Length: 337
Image (cartoon, rainbow, N blue to C red; front, side, top):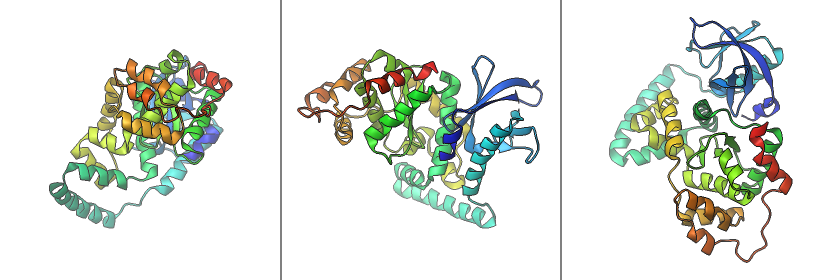
């Protein structure tokens, strides 16, 4: 999804309709985090599409007609050549990476399904989840994570996209996990029960935490906790989706849309599984960040935080700031534009 970087602030007008019988309406089209966002004139989101799945229904024609997938009735017309090229660039890079289907693939899928049934009986669903998660490519993880994020944005409002705030979050990501760490941090405008990480290494935190706790170490703690608590984000999703959806992903490379929507609802309702203090302390030590400030947020969420204070891995050491004061202010204002 690196091709998105040059287009992240791009916007254009378009004509959108939810289905074939609706009247077309003028909308604003913009890029979200691995999603295409369709908003009304007031900036309210109307639809979110997973970019890897977007289909162009009339190649080489203008205005271009796009849909969230090849079978969808929802459509979007765009005549802005820059936006058309941007969408086509991302689509093209992803289509090239998709496996080709054919008779051999169908035979292999059948053989794999039989092996899955036998393996499930022999080793159980936990082993099947791990095997399936391990088999999902980085490209497919990005697509799945983007789709879940799209469902989340439909419920909470779009991801906050202040330019300076996003740059400061990239700095925070590098400070916590290293320059080569995959993924990114995104901020949703609505309150969440806790932070979490989606497939594709999308770490999600919320605006209310940034505003309520005026300490970058607490925000850093939320990011650390999100990445520590989830384990493999793909496996966490499959645990919620259940065995039939897991088998479908393993054999077809796809998950039911309902499973992704339900997972978004679950994250908004109850958040991820709480992570133990022992796991958290190791994660804080790896990031070289003091754990004591984060104890206050843990306590506010009715989770034990005492050990984060008494066993702070940075106690007695000179802390390395996670952000400058200016960068922290930019992060706090990320939802202000």
